[in-house]
Image (tube, rainbow, N blue to C red; front, side, top):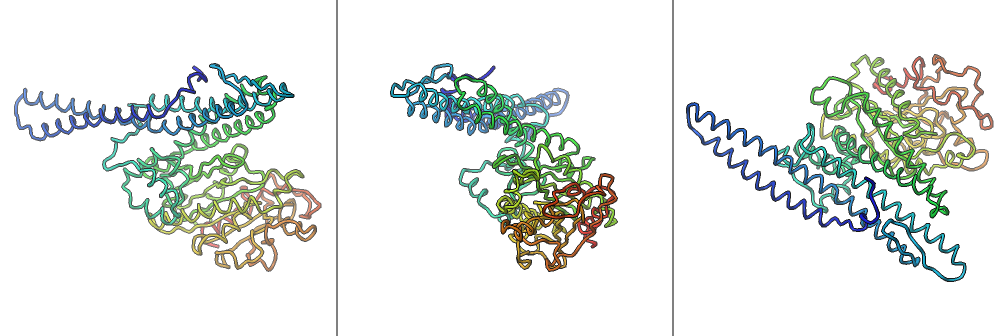
Length: 564
């Protein structure tokens, strides 16, 4: 049943919190009974058939009450998780009602606003006012639909196989708001130290109860980020689906005609988000979770290390292999035209090619190598005229490099508190090479062991000494034809004085060592492509570097394997 405005405007989180407290108290009493029965079982010394029957009855009661305690704990967890969602709805309702009041509108029980303005040009003002209020109501309904469905899902899982609860582990505890804020404000190194001191049960508990906090927390182990982000993925996909439903109604609402374009843009973005989440989910289905792998389950691990929906689009980082224990970990950062919904599967495939090439070139088992497809920033759009402003500007790279530097620093710190230091390489393609180069100026020395840039418009800095990577471990690859993007930042700067993507790493004085630029072995290589020039807009070979059959792939693989 769809959520109605007449219902939503009466919602309150306080009643939910109070009921959670009541259920928690009942659970405490059940746990006391469990402890009492356990004490009786331990102290019972009777022998014979009657004693055995009594012992069995006490064991059955102990199991039943323990299960009930777990179920009640899961109910509490579901209610507690719903509280912030309800608070969001309350705030949205408050905003809608406040907007209505300021515009002299009322909202009827069906959620239809009516403006009572009677001044000059009242008809046009009334239409604008009513559309504005209706838009706020749409936002509140979308949030309410998500909160309702999310709670129903959580309650529906109570007592089912694989469900989790506060009673599942010993020594687990909730975090106060101040503790949560402290966790969020830690540096990656501080967070890695904090996380390493938690019990395994507490780590699981934090993943399950604070997934939004843990999933993107640099410094937390990969298995834990994956566990948390799988929860986040389900919730974010549901929220986006509910937003799509509400916006579809809004787009066709005559009362919101003046907001039709705005609503359509929001609908398109929400539909792209749903598609992105679906692509991530299908990608994860091609392997097993990292936590399951580390506990001995057979299969190849695929983990979700980043999941964010801020900025222009959904962002994600998907790893193949065991990032917590592999000897060699490579982070692949793609560039121009990258979106999760449109590119994730392809970049996971290319990162898989790189992983296999590294294992082959390093003569090592595949489990010793992990690769990460890091689509964790807003990349510029496809190489078209309307996107040249983003392509030639360093702004998106600067924003992305902050995130990337934190991610890499956190991974390094996590390894130092876990399996030990790994050989970490950063592999940047296209605009992602600029983002990678900038990140290399922001991390401490030793975080990035090898830096590889290819198809690069610029290395993110004009001063090679800014890079916190040893000079003998800076590598560059560039095909001679069909890669207009290669060095375009420098060409823009020389020709029109615009662009700050950094020095071309292909230049002789860049301090980068040249890797093979031979990608002709790829079946899709364009042998008739034009030489790389500013006015020869040919990108037919821009994305061939990590394709099978190329020497570029093998040579980059040697770097990732640490044998170059």
